[in-house]
Picture 1 (cartoon, rainbow, N blue to C red):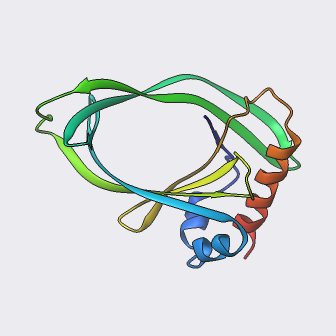
Picture 2 (picture 1 turned 90 degrees about the vertical axis):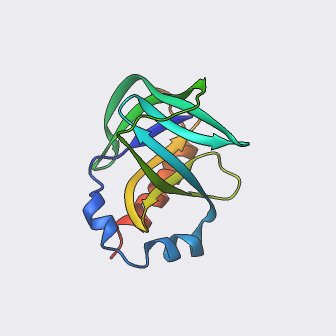
Length: 154
């Protein structure tokens, strides 16, 4: 899936909206999951079926579309998780975190608003879609527009 950011959405403003997730739940479908992750300078680690697996984030290319929606730009980031394999130890300098990913979508749409939380605080907000940044997909535009409307309302 492609990951998209809208730079005009200020994460600080989003963090200050106390009822944001409840309001989004009333309008959109919600799924969430929590992952226990160990972060280190050489990648990150997750347990999967009692095996400790090492991963790296591989980022390919990023593209920017200005005037994506009226006054909003769109930054498309093409990245994926690469599973390195099973390991038996983690670096000494590492941090353990619980990362909660909350995904919202409209109906059966494959376009998602994702809010990531660490320690019950919002740390990231982005959109996921199967569409590529250079594709003109009116359904993606409509879904993102609906999400932005909810995010920016007072």
